[in-house]
Image (cartoon, rainbow, N blue to C red; front, side):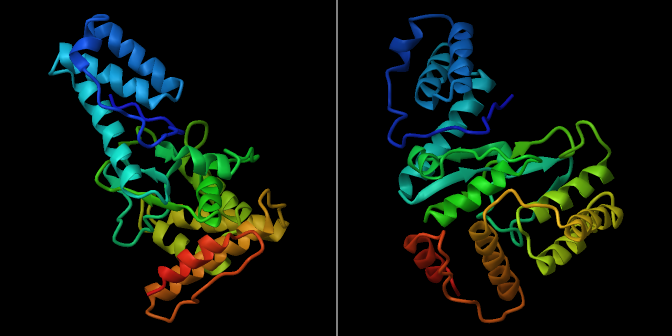
Length: 274
């Protein structure tokens, strides 16, 4: 079983090469595996990688250690290659359903597998407590507002064993709640319209997208208070407009100069303009 934390703070350059054989002498493969998972729970990837390496030194066919060490080293390499990468992660799959990253924005990093560069996490002040959820979305958008790059790497995949949001409710109610959350974080109405149409192609076909649109519309009519800043709403909507214009081949707006946006982030958006 691949164990991936919601927040895995990576001090890049931290997962150092070690003499796995020497470490392995400190205990059995099972003991090293237990320590490795304990380090993951404590958000200590350097120590966890060292213990997983020790497991493989004692048991080269241990699939758990192979998978976890492979994930740790993969993302360490990605963060090391790009010093401006603040948040990285992997997409998720529910059954046979997975986002098509030919159309989905790779800058969106799903909360089930979000890995932060420590400096980025400190810059945004960590996860902001938000009633109703979406703390992962807000963290990623805020990271971009601070000038950090965020990216999902489709080379790795997380298996999500339950339809998102259905722990205590039905799929349709979960979609409705998703629409409520979309409004709360400031999604543009036109963006949400296209998002609802897209969701209509996913199970439950048609009804899921309708429930999403209904949740958003209900919140808009009720004028539900948003728990995020106006600057974040403006920044998100600007990004959404750029993506819609790019989708239809229109000329995109070159720069967003908002009071909550760093000059580095504004320059980065200009560089990404086609």
